[in-house]
Length: 293
Image (cartoon, rainbow, N blue to C red; front, side, top):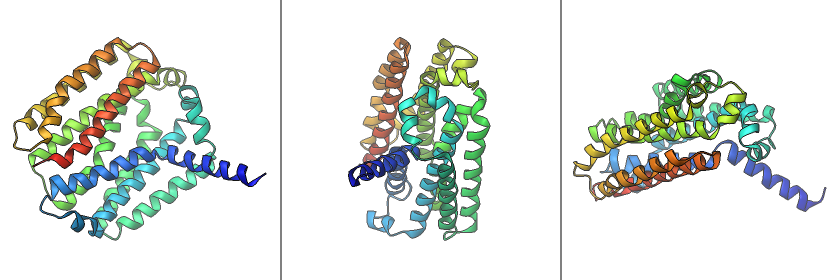
């Protein structure tokens, strides 16, 4: 094998691992935690103070590593249906063998627990519980339609609870903002079930579209999106600075997303709906820097 072929194969393996641990999502999670801490939880801190806070860094790192490990174990259990729903992605991610995936899963979790142990025993217990819930979700809960989506959205919010506990800031605004993101993530997760209908049906996953119908699932997604407007309306009333523009824009943007959802009939169209919501979540994360400005 030539050096060029070796280099190409190594690059593909790096891309495989990046896709496996959802590198994009992990990057957004880390950014969101730092922005949340800097502009919402401890606005009195300077940016440098936060960057030099080792215990906060340890909590964020542990969150990122355990979440990355969670994506790996989720991918491990979903391999059969992903082969149907996303064959190209499946081929890329399985350049890394399933045995190596499991080794990487355990390594990431162990490193996370070791890092969290530098903060306190309570933090270790928190992240150990987080790790177990992710495994339970991936191995069992994901197959039950009445729990799957609720748990998935909850797991995405849980790392923010860790930094909230660390800074001991329980302002009402934080919970309304978390509720807004929770319902948005919940809607996105259910849209993914529409997108992955074929593989879920073949592998007998009891997702909402499989158990009920696409029409009923769209009604539930609509309800989840409308629920985001309740905390958004509250937050608009608060003196939060320019971030109010983001929540104000939620009404027209999410109305557009719902119209597109109800017109969607294909996997590709559902993927667009998924990406629209994903984009809005990213904009919401970046908008945190506008709070109190």
